[in-house]
Amino acid sequence: MWNLAVTARLAAVQQLHRRPVFKAKCVTFVSLMEIVKCLHLKARGKVYPCSEVLRFPVPDDKVDWAVPWTNYNPVDYTAPALLKQPSWADPPYRDEGELNKVLKFNQLDGDVDRRSHTGKYNLINGFPRNPCGRTGLKGRGLLGRWGPNHAADPIVTRWKKEGGKTVTHNCSGKPILQFVAICRKDNKEWAIPGGMVDAGEKVSATLRREFGEEALNSLELPEAERQGLKELINFLFEAGEMVYQGYVDDPRNTDNAWMETVAMNYHDETGESVGKLALHAGDDAGAVKWMDIEKEQNLYASHTHFLHQLVKGKNAHW
Image (cartoon, rainbow, N blue to C red; front, side, top):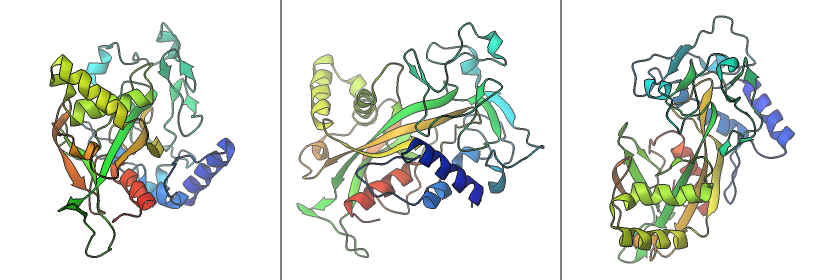
């Protein structure tokens, strides 16, 4: 469990910005302590994803930057693919003087949004510092941007039905909510079909694009069918409710680069629109299906937490 210093600092940031650090709309807020407990565990996993790199072990009581730790010696790792400087990623650097163009952190930098949902983050020796604490690894790992890497997660839901009637759980007596889940190809974990926000792209566009590509395999459709599907998705995604906005406990996070997301819920109350779409895995998805939402699920990153927030707001089974 995290120490009280972490809680106090998050509370201070929350008061400073006059909004929740981990913002949610149209759902019930969890307590600050409950949020703290569920964060920054997967971001301290022993082996960094898609590598053999071992993180420097970080115990719970040393996560907070405010806790002195002179022996902290995080591994420096940035994936080889990023060192080749692809167009969609930031350049590597060890000193700001090496950069042809200074990166403008904590602000909109051209088409790249370097602002954090958690508020202003610190810069140490020219590098952004993870606002949720130590991870045991510095550099960018697999993430393209220094600082926040923004994603969008569309949570598409319907009520579970049998014979045209909504199914309730035997124990809770509450209706069972289902969501569109994908099985990620990279780690075989089930997840919400989200993805990265491209430079200059609106979050609303990312939500539509990612759902189409990952859950409906829109990229493989003929042009005419693709346009028809795009129009349908645009119609279905006209109205949604924000479930979560903020930091994500992602296994790819480092001391200098981390994931943040906006999770939106698009609910089909009758099951006659989104609920009848033919699901086809595509893009980064190995499989796709309607999955019952329940407490025992172990989903990718912070996705179980997002669904818990959603379920409480709809008074569904958990």
